[in-house]
Length: 108
Image (cartoon, rainbow, N blue to C red):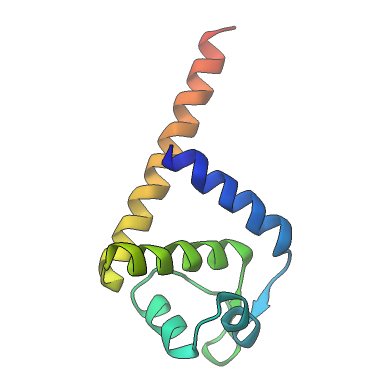
């Protein structure tokens, strides 16, 4: 269930968020101040590219940040907990993809 929901959210976000974002654009789309984005970066929730003064954020980072903010708000996790939860969700999604691939190959 969680994997399907995450994939639906990811597809919606990727459809609407094509291209790289500057810090200002990222904060605007995330509807959060720079201090929150700095915390997300500091705890490894998101990993923008570019130099420190010219951070570039991808649609994938925006998806992670949005999911992270929801985890923080809904489950009252601290930022370290959010980073861990996102890592575990991504591992679960990867395992689900591997199982689906193995199942498809076994049916041949």
